[in-house]
Image (cartoon, rainbow, N blue to C red; front, side, top):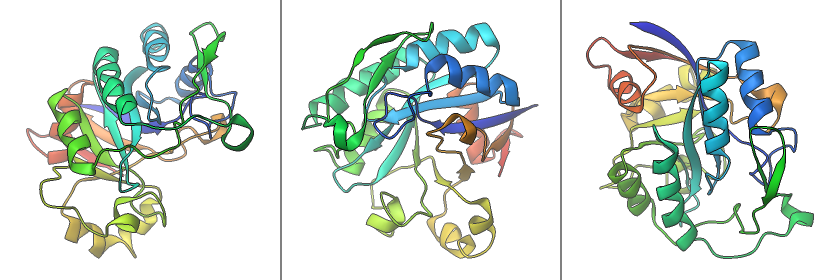
Length: 244
């Protein structure tokens, strides 16, 4: 087994709340600098910056998994993580069909599409910060149909989380894991809560600024940097495991 330092929740300049310095190039260069092995680029309700990040990762030696952070009808944030950019872009089609509204940059921030050369290619005018007209169960089913991994975002936060919005995992919602922002919470105050959920736990940075990348990492023990290996590690199968 190999040891992988992993941050599965990073936003780029495409997210309205993401810093404009969070271009695909600067993100991947920062990850290489601090020794991250695997990251997932998960912008709000969009995957338009994943392809350049994946290409840069291949060049610079960082495995970039394409993903997005999806906001359900219940306003629960879910990380969708895939092996291939095409899978994330297929999920994006479903998301866009269910996403209403137009961005107002003066209130929410610019939503910048950038390439691997640090060039601006355009702006996304959808309301990426908004909630979809799709329920949590429908979203999770579609992510799994496309071969992705579903992780409930920052469940220890007081808003936009599974626990703050619903307080439980609804029947029929087959999550692969939950993310915590604070590992200490998971070991203390939240320990019993997480035990009751009965789901594997990871921690990630949810970085919106370069300085925050790798602030929280999960360490995966597995054979290779794929979604299937992540899934096995979350389940603790075939000698794979994860530590926070």
